[in-house]
Image (tube, rainbow, N blue to C red; front, side, top):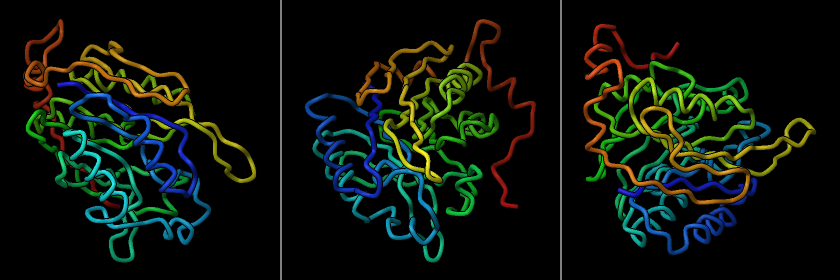
Length: 264
């Protein structure tokens, strides 16, 4: 299968503009699965929960889901992209997954940064999805900093890890390679680019999206420019997790107890 990431400077609070950017960048490129940034439609630095609430929407049939459903049908592909999900009185930082015009599901971000905790409720479970080509798990940005989260998905059979992201520091770029290598599993990290204002200061998002192989090797990468990166991945090659020291890494990992995230 052909895996892809998409990165661009997200226009703050303007879903229509971001839908247009995504459609233009996708263009005529062929791929089977694409990972897009966290909060791909509205941007990151919202001043309050009330401000964020104006852009929150249903994960399954809101404007962003409808856009992605149509685009996925046109491209005959799977899309993974982050939105602000409204569910009753709560707002979640949620990745929605659509495939070939069908809604496959959603993965709520389980681990929130200090900036996100006043805005979002945390998710409380991690699961894998299957689009017919690949069995994959989704971790949103700071979720990737929890080794247990990636390991839990791989122990559930994930052949690929997908990470929608919004970050400005250099650490997640490096950390993504570690997560791929310690789980012997390819990983796609799609980070946004561009600038936003936070607390009166302009903050920069660094881009540097990448597709990483099971030994941490970079198969495709970006700089800060708007770009679409692709790489060929054979999911069946990543069912049995192995590395130079071990023929079945998850068999060794199963010696340790591991459960899903718990709400405090």
